[in-house]
Length: 374
Image 1 (tube, rainbow, N blue to C red):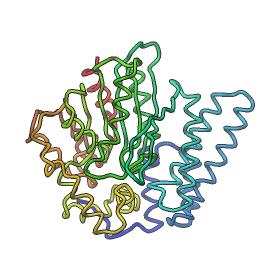
Image 2 (image 1 turned 90 degrees about the horizontal axis):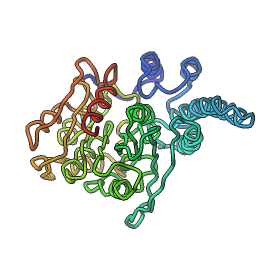
Image 3 (image 1 turned 45 degrees about the vertical axis):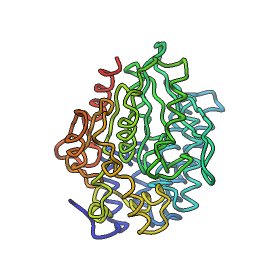
Image 4 (image 1 turned 90 degrees about the vertical axis):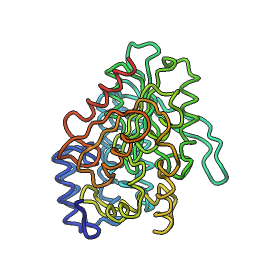
């Protein structure tokens, strides 16, 4: 495993970001390249205050452009500017809002994204459903719905992201699925974004009200539901596919762990993977609600689906897709899943890292889902 000896220096981080910007991959695939290069060049620190300030300034500039375009009735320009504002605010809170200034950037991110969604094609609808949370938890779940043009009662894919890519970062996938005639519902992974709870061994309860809403709605094709979990979210897609196989036509684990990822040896190896920019442990801990390293390790241990006794049970048709050289989630988890329970579909991309980003990845997912929902 390629790993760093500790947190990146500022100069090392800048080199890493420029390489991702050149490749146009997460987390540098959303924003205007020239503006982004300038922000990276002038970045003075990776601490929350300096980090957020650099990205928020550019986000604010695009928000002003968007507001002016709206005032002038130019909805296309407003859409594009709001998307850029969202992208820079996303970077301002990345990888998670663990500082007040980064939290403020996240709050601006949500507003900018929902403004973009009003003009997107197809447009992005904001829906909220009640959540019966425990004491100290939230009481509602917010998600985004996109319907394909000219399709009555389409099949629907419910999806969520990982520890740092949230419901707003599912846009490219939802656009591709809409073009394929499929509706999408995008929500936040457990313990992230606007999720009402922290990640724990029963975190799947967050998804059930959304699933119930979809099943009881007259907007979608009955019995033609799939789920997609991106990055860490693949963990929950795998768990739901085993808990409720009769409810899903298909499920996708796109780079998520099930057992080996949560073991102490992998936790140590993946503290500073070369594939991650910064603060991976802090971001995972925030998702878990862990206040120290001991709680982080124990929180991960409890998530093992093997130890929960699920992997030998029947599951919905399940696609396992990742890069073969992932340094955040071990490929051995895919091997474990193929050795247990029902047969699985697998696609590993040689020479690629976490989630297998590159040509054909998103297309593979969309094609596999379309074949099972058509």
